[in-house]
Amino acid sequence: MISVEGLTKHFGPVRAVDGLSFTARPGMVTGFLGPNGAGKTTTLRMLLGLVTPTSGRALVNGRPYAELDRPVTEVGAALEATGFHPGRSARDHLRIACTAAGLPERRVDTVLERTGLTTAADRRVIGYSLGMRQRLALATAILGEPRVLILDEPANGLDPAGVHWLRSLLRHLAEEGCTVLVSSHVLPEVEQTADHVVIVAHGRLVRDAPLAELVGAGGELRVRTEQAGELAVALENAGGRVRREDDRLWVTGLEPEDVGRAALDTRAVLTELGRERSALEKIFLELTMAEPDGPPAPPGTGPGPEETGPEKVGAPGKGGQS
Amino acid sequence: MINLVRAELLKIRSTRMWLGMLALSLGFSLMGLAVYVALSGVEMDGDMAIPPVTDPQTVRAFYASASGGVLFMMILGIMGITGEYRHQTISGTFLVTPVRGRVLAAKLISYFLFGAGFGLATVLATVAVALPALAIKGGSTSLLDHDVPLILGGTVLAMALYALVGLGLGALIRNQIAAIIVAVGWVQLVEGIVTVALPQVGQWLPAGAVRAITFTTSMFGPGELDTLPAWGGVLLLVGYGLAFAAVATVTTVRRDIT
Image 1 (spheres, each protein chain N blue to C red):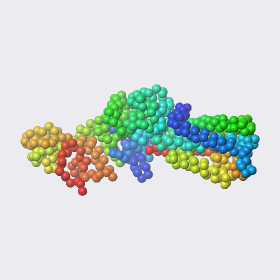
Image 2 (tube, chains in turn green, blue):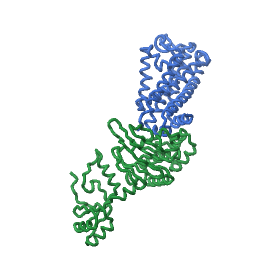
Image 3 (cartoon, one colour):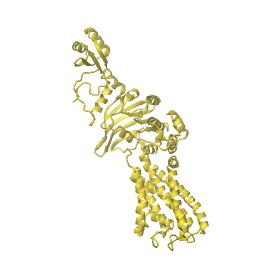
Image 4 (cartoon, rainbow over the protein chains, first blue to last red):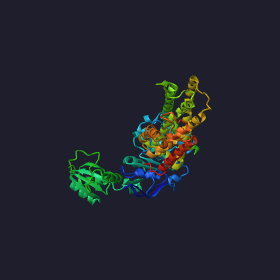
């Protein structure tokens, strides 16, 4: 159980984290999402006692990290900016952590095996790929068999097989009743793993909701037809809200079969019908585009400049570029 | 605490850095010794650069050359802290042991112990060369006369305490390269100049304390340099070690690790 209450951190004039509150519960993977610079890492570091909050509290199992008796056996953490001495082997790195934590040394072999590092264990870390370092970070995190896991961008640098492995590891841990908090700025990763999502931007909470609620709701359909005018009327009559742009329509409040039926009734020929981004993607994209140094978000105009629909076939330039 | 000390000692042993530093320490000490051995009792322009081995002062200088390695133990101490920042292992260290004072205490104890071992190795190597050299040149081969036990023991202690100075300096400066440059510049330049130009000040510097402990008061330059008594040197060096240990602790306990 992780609880963050009114957490705030100022670095000089910068409010890295600003009155953030959320909880991560056992038995769930909680995705901690936000664009780069949103304050995710600072929040995780405050949870782990590495950074002192300006105000507010960050508690693990109801207590500040520094007050846990044997922290490694309660909380496992893999932080992005946590390194390894390049001249030290993975095995020695784990042995040091084991020794300092007073854990039995056979745990080293166990976690090496679980993270697939056994054969590379005695090599110096300098020769490790980014993916292997991530595995070593995870091995360190699960060394003390903790029931709470805090992982900062754990999928960075993993190959597809590694991402798959990580996903099943996290799911497995959550099913065992562990509390898993995973930060990421890569959306699909979280969409496939998390049960609950906490979204932050500029150090503040934006959304805190079950993933299902965000993914299911507010979905928009994209329709393309030569008879756009007639179909738009039919869709509105069917209870949908329609936005039209030349031969393209964006429809909310209806499912694809409703659109298909309306097209049949009006004898409109559909050249394209698909779901637009999920609400989660939308929220996330808006946040990313609202970044002070990111591309400006044109308010209220349909799909932003980062439209990545798969069927974007030679769409005739609809302004935007200047 | 024993676990933490074992972990810190394992940290030192699990990279090759200490071997390199030990090699430098031995090399530096033995090179100094070789100069004494070669030049003692040799006449140059009718004058002797270094008195012959029958002079107790020369015997002391032979054994005291082991103290030439203290700089390298200090660098090892500097790396013991700055390396954790440089390679970002400090986060992991504090995750295992969030009460930072305990980590610092463990580091200080480990480096003191390691420094003593490091000093012992340097002293033994020096003795292994100095003893036969003295025998061949007709000097005293007693390891009990001419304050030799004090010189050798003092050197071991100095190594251990310089490790603490290194830890403190590393915690204060944190940038590895900068800290090492400061250490080398201090030992090789500043202390040397102050010792010769202002001996009454130089005797209070760490190098002055080492000189007091190793009874090497008049090897260079004219006459005797102002030097504390041996016990004063020990106290002064312990004082420096503790002061820098305190600096290491205070600067590290509250700092944000980002």
